Image 1 (cartoon, rainbow, N blue to C red):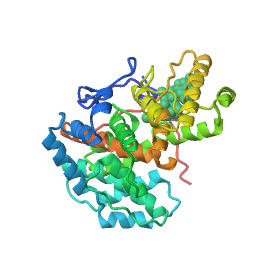
Image 2: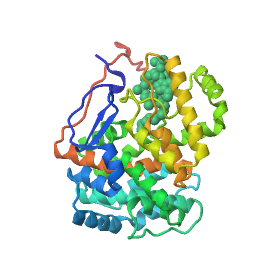
Image 3: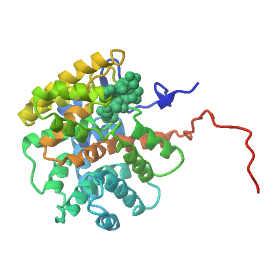
Image 4: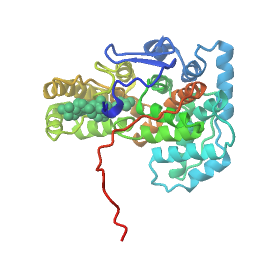
Length: 366
Ligand code: ACO
């Protein structure tokens, strides 16, 4: 039997995260995502994914020091970023940057230290690329800032406000892992061949880039811009659906109810984002859900994580073409945890395909 898109195919077991699509539940290593978004830092959640337990205060301090120690990029990797054309797309730059860090880091590297180092460095790659493409001086990381604040600081050169710190940390926590999504699967397939951490994460970045996966949040903001005002929402959405277009930020392969991450981000956006953008987003969400349910009554289409990610990332001051790369900065924690888990109990991932092409042809040898 052929299962297009591998929907509902279970490819193995994991200790990392549980995605309950019917209930709208997301759990990392036994902890509900709501609990983590409220109480944990991104670094602590990365630790939880890598080690399977909440870090103690001393372990949290050591973790922050380790991340700070690893944040700088190898000089050769930085030179590769410098050589990229200024109009390179950020996800292409990130994919190249991860690969370049891998080239500059020879030897065995599927271990906790390299997972931590790469998670720290991905944020630096994005920030460095963004500064270089504007001909701006690089902003060195600051050891006293946490990971999310450092990321914003290295991008803008300005210390983020308390609200921005809260928002970026919650965003990074929420996106850190998510079951067997397409980019994680990509990372695990690459790991299963006996390849290395950097190849796995380079491949994962490539998979995340697509608009059906991580490429949607900037498109949500484009959609909100195109709609312009709450009064236009219904007409705009009706005509988009009539043209058979997909509404960005709606629908999910696994969630058949609202994505729990979208609910948390909605509350964060309500509290901290630009009120005009939030009002528009809420009207578009309500109208989009109503019209999608009318147009596709058999499909249970709800808001996904990308919808309010757009308002939150806009509110922390990120340019919209960095939204997907910021997603990758968070997910590197989960990807690397999956790489470690796959390598610890590996079997080559090699599914089958049904051949439906012609048979019995003879090559014309003349
Ligand atoms: N807008 C309109 N219709 C939709 C949408 C949408 N956002 N999502 C799904 N549908 C419809 C499809 O047209 C299809 O209808 P049909 O059977 O009448 O043709 C039906 O729902 C099923 O769609 P599939 O593509 O088979 O569903 P799948 O599970 O493969 O897709 C996906 C999930 C890719 C996320 C889809 O909902 C989508 O394209 N959403 C918009 C893009 C988006 O928001 N991406 C971010 C996803 S979240 C993440 O990866 C972090």
